[in-house]
Each structure stands twice: as C-alpha cells, then as structure tokens.
Image 1 (cartoon, helix red, strand yellow):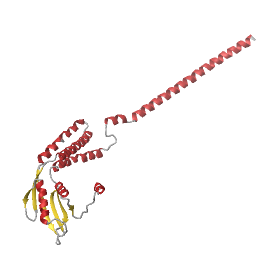
Image 2 (cartoon, rainbow, N blue to C red):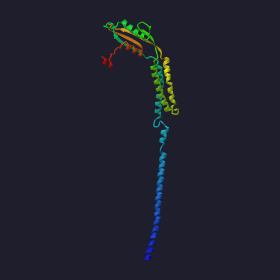
Image 3 (cartoon, rainbow, N blue to C red):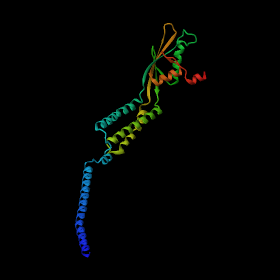
Image 4 (cartoon, rainbow, N blue to C red):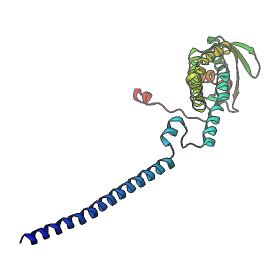
Length: 257
C-alpha cells in the first residue's frame, strides 16, 4: 500500500509540474494580446487626432469662419458706398425743395366768393405777415423773403449723420479688426453736420404766384412755385384746396361736427 501511495504521489507531482508550464504560457499570451490591442488603440487614436483640423482654434482666431471672402468684401463695399450718400444728405439739408402746385377757388361769378382783387389782397397780406417783399410784378408776382435755419432740421441731420458714421465704423472694424474700436472715432465728425447746416441754412427764398380766371368766372386757379414747406403753410392758412382734390374731414373734425 505504501508503494502504491508513493507512486501515486509521484505521478501527481509530475502532472502538476507538467501543467504549470502550460498555465504560464497562456497567461503570457494573454498579456501579449492585451499589449498589442492597447498599442493598436493608441496608434489609431493618434492618427485620428492628427487628421482632425483644429476647428476650435480656427473659430477663435478667425471671425469669418464659414463666410466667403467675396461676399464679405462685396457687403463691406456696398456699405462703404453709403459714404457719398451721407455727404449728399448733409449738403442738401440747407437747400430748399422746389415744387409747383395749382389750387382752385371759387370765382367771382359764384355767390359769396371773393373778387379777384380781394383774393390778390389776401395773398399779399399773407406774404407780408412773413416778411416777404414784392420783388417783381406783372402776370406773375414774385415775393422774396429770408428763410431762417431751423434747429430741428439741424438736429435731425446731425442725428442721421451720427448713426450713418457708426454703421460705417462697424463695417470697417469687422473688415480691419487690427484697428479695433478706433474706427468709431468717425462718429466725432457728426457735429460737423450741425455747423455746416447753420452756415448755409439761412437763405433767400422766392415764391412766384399767378392767378388765372376761367372764362365763365366760376373758378380761379392759383399757381404757386417755391419751397414745398412754404407752399404747404400757404395752403393751410388760406384754406386752399389743390386742383383735382377733394377735402375729406378727419376723425376729430367729424366728431366735432
């Protein structure tokens, strides 16, 4: 029995010695496989990062990411073309806008209507009230007067100029960011529009008047030519209706009536 037991123990030791080298070989193979997979993952990750463009860096350094250069400069050029328009607006502000209008009133043949002399006297009194003088007489009467500069119009021109120059500065600061916010110093030129207007705002205005009576004396046409603002005031004060127009009462006038 002892011999058999000893023989069996020797066999078990031999089996253990045979199995142990096999187990070590499998563990080493597993480690080699893991290392190879890890190296493959690192290599693929490195290649992916190397092929990806630095989009974040570009978006930070370039304010025109995704914008075509042609469209950008065309837009900037169109805005900069507004600069002559700004100067044109400032230059035309002190000048009058000439218009010609015809008003129709009842003639002397209608009951209760003014005579031609009374109508001419009414027109003369109107221009005299606003310090106009008669410059020429005849079929066409010319009245001459001094038109004073208006502070409200000067303020409006200065306001429009300020925001126009601010818009130009915004475009220039976008196209040339190296200058930065210094472009907005252009808005300091806006008060120049105020002084330019007042240096030329006071001017001499001429208003030309002609009256034409119909053949049957039923109507009188009053033709007036001059500054549109003066024509508007003239028609309102004398309650004249433009020829071919019909007077429509406003909401307040209808409520009072």
